Length: 368
Image (cartoon, rainbow, N blue to C red):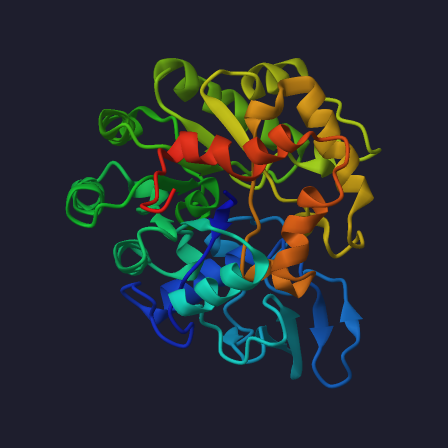
């Protein structure tokens, strides 16, 4: 059985998508796009542009996001903005996505064509506040979808978000938490996810016995040191809540630890990655598909290195559909592992492509 750890359903981005204000949704999107793997192009001639136009350098918070560029949602997978009378766009989704939306039926069709049996629906705020939509998909197609829930990550300790956790788990029946450090930029990175004010939130999540899909980045400095500092903070939670199950979304950063094709991890990172309650996603096409070509032999080498260092039980395949189709098809995002990682035994492929994730999320579809 093939299970994708990382897919999305979301409403049309021209709407609020569950946020109180459309402006908030646009800010989440703009912040994510300040460091995208997607290309930036000049609209009038399609020329690529390699300058930071969405934010003011030196300020990595929401306060640094430029509000004079008319950032807006376009069509055909593009986000538009204007600088000094010149229009630009970022090709964030595939060109075939005429309207920026991904209803459950889109994923069902993609899964049927690519041979994917089940998907975890993640819940980043740039997609909207998707708890209710994820719950609809999970409840309508329980053999196909497992939905995660999300809150305002930085304000998760507030009563309204603690109540939302309760609603998402007990009423919506969602099956895990998506949590991202990028959201702290909205509040100027004035505290971290291990600050004492966050204790009620993490204690509540621990009591629910759900997996945590955590997206660790290098904020607030966006460099190697920033990433390592966040890994050290994560270790506080891994050791404080040893029974909690954690999956690192997007996997280890190649730019910091695997740039030359071989993994070289600092001691603290290797220690944290080796924790018994910690696993990580394998999803190289979305991160490096703009630089590498299918079937991604560079990624195959890195997968072998992770297996040899940490064991196959640590590795979980994900795609990031529908985003990944700006680089390759859904089937290719699976086949570079399924067909081309010849160093993996069939049993190892079964674990990476399905059973490791099924164990993490306790997935038992009706037909399995």
